Image (cartoon, rainbow, N blue to C red; front, side, top):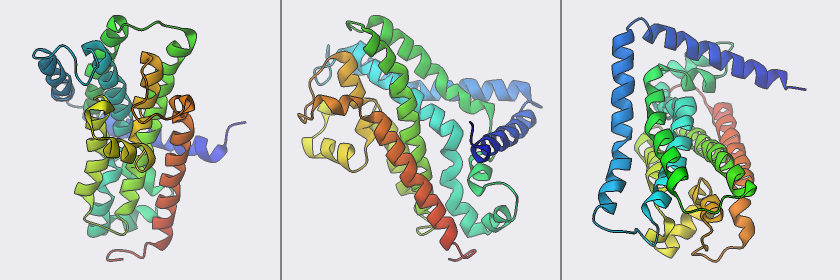
Length: 272
């Protein structure tokens, strides 16, 4: 049986997002052009990867389709999470301006209000290059496809979306205490999205340990990708780590929820 609170929250999120979408649809040409521009700008990361392969046959031991597979899964997961929860990074602005106080007296979760703020269809343009690149990588990658590997692809995208979503909320909640930490938050979210587009074998082992055990970005797509691509783990972690993304996603989302609720509970209006 569905949780009535969760159902109501999702319904309210949809209603608020649809209100913003209808407002944007009043200017259809502008909406389409903005979406295309967003898609083009987002696709520059894929273009940069292709440019690298124009000068080298492999990057950190990975062929072009394999790196594009990492890009596609990372960009798709991050794009979805950004659409759904990306504007939570504006919390510090609302705290400074005092507008969070107004949100608290409304019969809607402040998280839902901030997450749907200025919701625009142009944000869906971020998904276009990710879907196209992922489709190409799946077709071209030298992978012995089994039912397990096929199932892992949507699982890693869903878990990656949840991990990024949890990080959006967690870094947003930090702004209850550090109001001006907006830039630092971006280093985790946008920086994490860029990092997970490339093989972890490009980076120092200590850094890889950090994004595995501290900020678990390695579970967005790297660990499950090792299973799909049949590659060894440079850290020598057990094979079970390839399947740990769902558990990590639940943990990160739980930490984000606790941090957000704790921040709200201790919030004492502007200046606190």
